[in-house]
Structures are given as C-alpha cells and as structure tokens.
Length: 593
Ligand code: SER
Image (cartoon, rainbow, N blue to C red; front, side):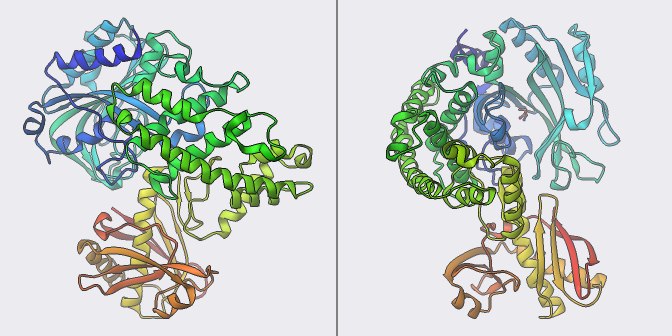
C-alpha cells in the first residue's frame, strides 16, 4: 500500500464504524495554550471537556482525522532516522460515544487488517491518585495479547504540558519494537498545576473527573507507513523518498533528511499562514528556513570562497523541493495547492534577506585571521553564520576553533543578555532565552510569557502595597516559576503577601490589555515607566503597559518582551515562597495556576 492508501484505509475503517471524518485543523491552533498544533485531539478539546456538543457539530459522538502536527521539541534531533518536526497524526476520537473496550478492539482489528502483528502493549501501572488500568489489561488478555507491560505515569499518562485540558491513562501498542499507536482514555481534566505528561495527576487535587469519559488515539502516519512498507526508517517511505531524490548526490544522508523534513514543514507552515519573524511560530519557521538555506549553500561544496559564493547555483534548489511537497501532499491537503504561490514567495523573500546577511558575515569572516571562539560567536550573533559554516569556510584559519569554546561564548552571552530576543538561529539549546526568560519548547514559551507579564504586575503590586522603596533587583523566569528580587528591608507579612496576590489577580480578572510602544530611551524614562537600574538599554526601547478600563497604566516598564496581549490569558497568581537574598534584598517565587 502506498501512503495515500494507508491514510485512506484508516479514515475509511472508522467511517464504516460510525465515525465522521473531520478535516485536519490548521497548524496554527485556536487553542492559545500551544504555539502550533501538536496532536490530533487539539481541535477536539472542547468536546472532551463538555464545552461543545459533538452531535450538534458533527452529527456524531465519534470522529476520525488525519491531522497536521508540528513538534518543535524535536527540531535539533532531526537528521537521525526517526525524528521529525512536521508529521501527520491519524486518530479516532470519542466524546462519550464508546467504551475503553471498544477503543482497544478497534485498534486491534485495524492493525490486523493492515497485516501487522502486535508485539506487546503497555498499560498504566497506577499510583496513589489514579488506579492501575486493570480494565485495559483484561481486554488485551482477552484478545490474546500476552506481553502486557505496566508502566508509570511518566510513560502511560497523557495530558497537556503546562496548560489545562483533558487527560488520562494510556495504552500503547508496539510493533517491531516501535511504538505505533497511543490510545488515551480521557477520564480526567488536568488543571495547570498538574499538567505535564510527567507530573500530570500528582496528588495535589488538581485532577477532576470528566463527566463523560472520552477516547483520543494517535498514530503517526510516517511510522505506520514505515512499518507497512518494510522500510528501515521513515525517509525511505514514499512520504519522503521523492523529496530525497531531489537532493544532490554529494549531500550526506543526514543533511538530506533535514532537508526533506524541513521542506515539508516550511510548505505546510507557510500555507497555514505562518510567516517568518522573530517570535513564536514565526521564529520556528525562520529557524528551519535559515537552516536549509545554510545547508544548501554548504551543499554547493567548495563554493564558499570568492565572490559567487552565495548564489543558490552550487547548492540545492529548495524551491523545487517545496514544489515537490505541494505536488505530493496537495491532493489530501488542498490548502497547500491553493497557497502554493505564498509558499514560494515567502521562501524567496526570506532567502533574499538571509543571503544578504550571510554575505556580509562571510565578508567579515574573510577579514579575520585566526578565528577565535569569540569571533565565531560575534559572526553568529550579528550575521546568523552558524558554527558549521564558519568552521567550513574559514578552513585553516579556524583550526583552533572548537564547538565547546563556541558554546561557552554562547553561555556567557546568555548570562549577559537581558534583552527580549530570540537568540538562536538553529544550533542546539533553548528556544527562547532572553537571559531573564528561558523556555525549551513552544509550550514553555507560552508559560514563561505569562509569568513575565505576572512579574511586571507583581512589581506594580509590591510598590502599591509596600511603597516606592520597592525596586527590581533581578528576575529569572522558567516554565516552573517566576523569581523576582527587589529592594525591601524586611520580611513581608502574610497579609501583605495576600494583598499583593489579590492586586495581581484583580488585574488578571479584569482582562486588561497589554501594549507596547517603541520610543527613544530618553523619552521612555520620562514617562515614569519603571526600569531596571543595573541594565544598559539601547537608544530605542520598548515600553510595555498594562492599561485599565479607562486607558490608565496600572503597570509600565521598559522591557524587551514578550508579554501576553491580555491579562485574561494568565490564570491565577500565587506567591509560593519568600526569602532574603542579601542585605535589603528580598526574593519571591510565584506561579500561575
Ligand atoms: N493525544 C495523544 C498523543 O498525542 C493521542 O492522540 O499521543
């Protein structure tokens, strides 16, 4: 079977069993808690939680889809045999329509129809909050599966990471040592404190039983096709082979895979309306575009010297590969065909922009004798020249340059930089790192962004409650918590903490707008906006304000961002700890629940 037939078979199997085929939703989700669509169930969240009625909207309690998904957490892994950024997820869903038993039996039956033999399955072993999934165990046994492995919550419990949503224990099906299908029994609603696959359902009372338990299954099309077509890895399947065939012979295997993966991702992201930029989804797109542009230049082997260095001539015609993607996937995803003009145009524009930067970077590089880690980092930071390019192009001149020293420069810079900017172009590491905010993936970006706005509000609240002696002395934000240091000479009383929390939560409840303007530094400080005294600011700065119903600022600070657009996106603010960190400096930690 070719991949198209495999996809069709899945949809048809469930259609014949009372499911309604729902088209894939966009890669840009409606759900503000995620940056890009990462699972088939996302468009169905309101049906699981009972906020929307599936019978009214679909005419059935059961649906099936092939969903476009994108997972940024794997970007740096792409190039090996299995990791992908963009992929298609096949899934069947039930919002109170059928039972666990039916869900497992469907999976069993369909895999048999595909001609696959289940090697083993896993089930949830239980903990002090959610009991062991005895029922799934029994059902699998009945079906003749003998290898049933019990696993902890970190493996067999699915829920949203860092935000709220339906969750529950899972049973996973393995074929040829590959996890092929994940079946989630959504019995609970996880609140943010418990969210995150690993911690979901901790005994902090943040799990609520759903009124109608649901079924959410996910099977990556690429893996299924790989197994069915008997290929060693996904890039050999007919989903990728025609793309890989476009790559020049000289290109190494890993680069070919990166290209094939990124070309699909670029085409689908642009066709769904993402545009390259320096934030959020736009940044993800820019990062993968720049990576393929650089790789394409490198594939022009040896052409990195002299003046004609950066014509695409020597390398790979990326646009041709993008057109292949459109032709290959355009029948099933018609939006690709419809938006093919955008795909090409947006790529061309970004390419032009980046080529200019690269060219300047290479000129600069040619002026340096003996490239040090510091030089390399500067070239990277100012021109986006990746480490590999510098090493390759500079040849002997960079013989003392090694990745470890380069990374060290990076670390040093991260500590210094407090400017709100996405500083990575495609190496390894954090997705967002402003020095103050740190996030490893798109979900964490959302969380730290909310906490960042909370930090502004807390500074305003502290000044309101304790007086203007309070001044920021430091701030550090991760997906787990915000940490804020400020000048004040004594411990805060419980009722003061409560007042601060109430002040912040009042602003959140009122759903106030958060806006920024860019103005010269001299003018900015005159507006009375707060700023961090230890910080060196550029000539033009951003001033972020949270404004009340009458347009008056309740918080105003010089800041690089990013921030939420409205405080209504933030949840409930809570101070979890206070301590002293030196003479006259207090530290608080806070979370949004
Ligand atoms: N939501 C689950 C997953 O993404 C099953 O669809 O794996």
